[in-house]
Length: 388
Ligand SMILES: [Zn+2]
Image (cartoon, rainbow, N blue to C red; front, side, top):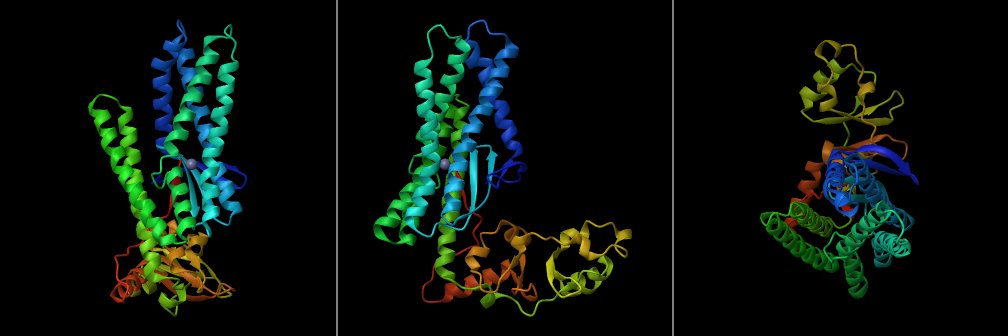
């Protein structure tokens, strides 16, 4: 999974982030183009110009990947799937979505939107490549041809039916539409995705052994595909086990809350030490929950400052850490912040604390559900992502 990323822009309301690995891959592409591709394609080119064009090509490549991801994200949002953001990382781009399509047609549309954009870009570049007159500088031809080749490769690769790649999502939507059975479609698509993932790892490692460094990249994608297919399958199993269990049915109640005006030292003594929990909801003077106070935030305060500092200043106000009593447990599991912190405050419409729900509560509910007649093996699912 992409891991940490830095927000660099917001397009159509969608946050765009880049991971540190993205910088590494931009450097790698610029370096390989600058040292081999451009000197080959443009005889006599100066090294500075060659590496400059390498960097330009890498940035143009990621611009087309970004447009591809925006295609997924905008169409998904239009069909009721929440989009958390787009990240550029080691393996290209990822549109992070929360929740799933409600109907196979919706999934089909947002899965195909990215490749449709890449197909249009490839077509335009193909026309441009044909239209370049013979007298044009070699540099122009080299720039256009590189973009044409990489976009065509991205298109072909992404349309492999290897869930969660775009082709795999299309397959999933079509299976779902055909049989009307989401669980069966997910089981089939993720099994095929897993197979492709292992095949990519094998081919990638063989290439690497044969001396092609690009094999490493393919092997990485294979690892990603297997992990993502497994995560998706586990999410499905969790969903089958818990059905539409609500947060209220598994939360711990009543909530133990910390007043925002309390000092950090008092909060440690009265709550963290005595009650041995890792996070508590914090309430303001009117009794409204403002967010969660985590043990990490408390530990970060210097010992000498703890008697003076108020907990109100340390509250984590991430909206993913508050939840309504009627929300689905399976939806909660898709919130990265909930999985990271391990707890969420359950609040009513007026943000009064009703209880606390923890990852442990979810696990307990899952174990209980496994004892029931349906059986199976569930586990907390990581957030879902679509690659490319
Ligand atoms: Zn895509």
